[in-house]
Image: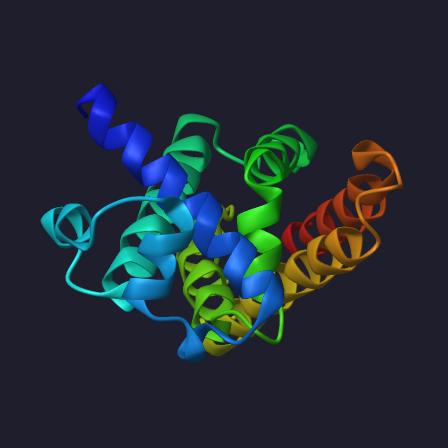
Length: 187
């Protein structure tokens, strides 16, 4: 991506985040965003159709990066140790914490959490070890939803607590619960 385009996207994302921290997303206009960011509306429309297209593009970029992190580091190794990939995913989200937190706030876009969870569920399903035949697709589906929803809940709580607790202390209980459950199921 061209440096100027990247710089414009960063500025618009930062400005949008500030506005969401102040009021509901649906009440934010392109004019208001452009005025606050000190850019021309024409510049905005060179990159995006509207505010929702902009948000969708930002969210897709985050989700795409998360998928790449997970695919690069198969999260569940032979001993069901998932801490390294959880750390990388959360560290990635932490770098963009202000935007992520704004999106997950009551003023933000609740669809973002659903998109994140759906993507994480699909990625987790693909990385689970083979289970004994007594565990059918329904079992695996709900196990995966439980794992991802639990991890998402812990991450959301950590964000709401302004990330005061060290990340490894937050992830360690998740890792123990998930690896213990998978280990028990596959024995």
